[in-house]
View: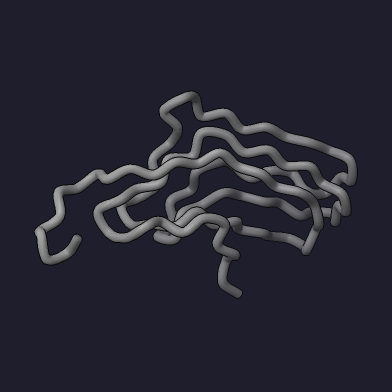
Length: 104
């Protein structure tokens, strides 16, 4: 199954920058992990253990954040079981490539 998209980038020539993500697991499933990735497969975080209900995690990539690939969306990769929880994120986007006038 495809990874759920959390944030969609505006268009090619723009990139998302992930500053922080907060996860709170409400329904853990043994062996389950969550991982933040971009839509071209770049891993943005290590796997988050989503097996224990009540656990919480914060990932902080600083004020500049970690850059996703040009034109890529932010996605959540779930493995090992379908745990439930709350996930929030702080993301901004900016133009990273000069676009031809016809592409704007």
